[in-house]
Structure formats: C-alpha cells, structure tokens
Image (cartoon, rainbow, N blue to C red):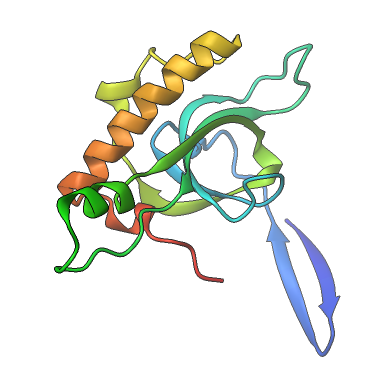
Length: 155
C-alpha cells in the first residue's frame, strides 16, 4: 500500500493507492461522470468496457452513452407540444479512457436494450446507435426510472 500526498492551499489530502487484485467494477451499466473533454461534467453509462490494450488504443477504455442535454423543467400550464419539446433528452456516444471518467455508486440496467446493438466503427453505424440510445434514454426518462441520471449535475 502506498500513499500519495497532495497539498491544496491550507489542507493536505492523502490518497491511498492499493492493489485490489482483479476486482473489475467498471461493468456495463455503471454510471460515470466524465472529467475531461467536450462532455466534461456530463453523466454517462458504460455500454461496453475493454480493460485490454489494443494497437489503436494502448489504454483501458469504455464505450459510454451519456446525456448531452438534460430535459428541462415542466410545469402544469404548458401545452403538450411544449412539454414534449422540453422533455427531450440529448445523447452522445463516446469511447473514453478509464482515466477520464469518475465511476459513481449508481447503476443502470441496460443489458436487454443495448447488448450487442451498439457499434461506433463508422459514422452511419454510430448515428443508428445514437438513435437507439436516444430512444432508450427517452423511454427511461418518461417512465421516471433512474431519475438522478437525468438531472443536471450541480457542482
């Protein structure tokens, strides 16, 4: 077990780095928060995880589907058209290095809807996959499940 000590202004933060063996917790369905890039601060869910390195990506990486644009607040006096427009969920698909996201304690069960159907090898397949993810996320938001996932992250 080793310790990393980082000094910030007036307090000291100690991180404990320990090897936990082969415990893999980055499984499909784990909700993460992206920490860098265009979608930094956005919530996403792991669709496929790859711990092995490849020639084109010499690092562990995951395919994540995330919420690009959160649904807006809806009140009772709005028309059905306005409610439908404000309830739209914008989505993105991205392959992300494991170092560039923060796993949360939350999970989303996406196994049935998205297993083996997501492919981002070329632009046309990625746009089809994005449409499928948008449909799944929209259905989840409409049913009221995974409410925390669709709220804007306040930090």
